[in-house]
Image (cartoon, rainbow, N blue to C red):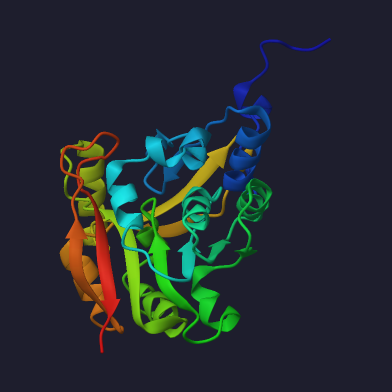
Length: 264
């Protein structure tokens, strides 16, 4: 007979299985119209993500800053961390030739299923091995995907790789968040924890959890505009403008989009 009062230490499932939790989140939303995920940080902090609907939202439901950012895009576009393809699909409708990349196999499957014409399972660190020099006129890292540069040490190499596959007058449209624009004590304590480790305040070590799955732990960077300038200074990119969301609906305090151009 089952013991309904079993010892939690022996009956709990323990650590989640490592896998494509983000991709399964997107597949579940595509197939059932409802899904959720949580973000877990390496200090034990856990918070809900935006949910699957965020990645499928039409332009009318985006934060206004993202719609403004797409107006800065020209020519052939590389969409870094394309997810379910919401930005790529909008750009395709405008007549752009778009290539989406994502490290998640599930995201690639969903984006392709939704109509993204060229989408590939690829780490942003490997773009120079995948594409010829001068392939893209614009690179987008929307949905806070500037964070995919990972760490201060890794960022210049990532940005140089993106410049390698961009044209001589290309534009990089990079969305992120000023991590210091908060009064949340959990975040402020984490910033101090990072400083003690010699890391930038917005350096995150995190993973996504969905159901019984969790992605591998990975680095993600939230950067002040001054930090974006510093990281780009070792690369062909230069920050020329920032888009501020102001009081627009759907934006979080500290959000901004950096507009970077290749320096001549």
